[in-house]
Length: 512
Ligand SMILES: Cc1cc2nc3c(=O)[nH]c(=O)nc-3n(C[C@H](O)[C@H](O)[C@H](O)COP(=O)(O)OP(=O)(O)OC[C@H]3O[C@@H](n4cnc5c(N)ncnc54)[C@H](O)[C@@H]3O)c2cc1C
Ligand code: FES
Image (cartoon, rainbow, N blue to C red; front, side):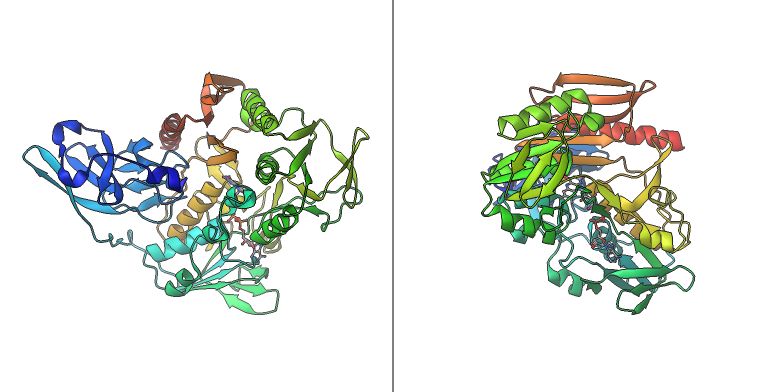
């Protein structure tokens, strides 16, 4: 992706652009020296910011302007046009900004501005010490936001992972496919944690939380006190309960360690079996195909992802994977595993050097349950992501929060939601009382086809298709009682962003 965008050509903005070429709402991509820059006209203001999203270099010129921000077309990060700040994950770093000058009916982009110094928001009730349980998307985004807000107290981040927080979605995509080096995975270098006085402790498992005494107990017996606690323990893969299936034979994918184990086996594998045809299973299948491995996918459903995306997307996903040579065994389950041999429910036997199960995940709730926090198919939080115990917050895959759009409490397993909840929880741990009102968003990548999804619809009574899903240019609106609850799209990035904004406005109007 980075390479494609580096090809951007456009006017040399240092030489000036006629003001008439930039009417209100216009975006113009060009260069200042070697830097790709986006010039944006908003009313009387003209902004010049970096043209590439700091997440995966998405082209901001193709994004959506919303007030004084621009949203990235690929995974919906949002940047402040005035300061360049990454206001919403998944981008975490700002884009640069340049000074703009108007002279003689022309607009000139001059020197790069110094990096904007963020002003901490509002009045706060600063805790002395924040403890974060979890080194994933939510936990990292919370720690990062605490420091962005100039919080000066202690931050301890406890993670049972053996690696610092990584870009988890990449583990089933480019990294597993062999097209992304491992250096791309960490969300930040090791130095980030020491530079920002974040006491990141890896291989550290929290065994219990004492909500009254306000401390956590580690598996080694050490106790760590907290003033505010964020629980962000994520989810764990469902282990297959198939007779004969040993964890050493049937691998799962959640952590970098899991991914390394799959890659190690993939290096010499000629044939793989993937159990499960949902997002992780199919992304793993696609990545193994990229390594030229013969891949068989075994799943009970006849129509992959139909329950989540509807029949049109299910057909698209099925067709793409077949075109790439996946051998589907749909309507079948694994009845038994014996080393490298898998017996299917229909009686046939497959043999493979690599077996991976992608059978869904379960939120890790045991700490919350043992601490007597309110749990209902997730850790129950209020609009501010605070649990039933004051001062203890939860975010990410474990959190069930009141979704304004549906009027229901929901829990989702999306990267962007986890990061944004981590950010909101950080603000609220500082006493800012900010409701979490982002509309859920996720993406999934199947070879070169990205599927984007905004909103949340567990069920629907009506599907409205626009464009041509089979032709990879369309979207599906999931509606209930005449209201759009979610929109899935393929190569309709702008429409996906517009749907996000419209769902947000509806949710806010509903909450007002
Ligand atoms: C391979 C893969 C690909 C994915 N792709 C996508 C995608 O394309 N798009 C998308 O939207 N979502 C995707 N997801 C889902 C997304 O990664 C999750 O929704 C997100 O990681 C959730 O973040 P989290 O912080 O809640 O949990 P996690 O990121 O899982 O982090 C949980 C952390 O808690 C730690 N932990 C757990 N228990 C303890 C304990 N007792 N003590 C100490 N530490 C503990 C873990 O070690 C881990 O560090 C993918 C997930 C996987 C596994
Ligand atoms: S590339 Fe911009 S949000 Fe991912």
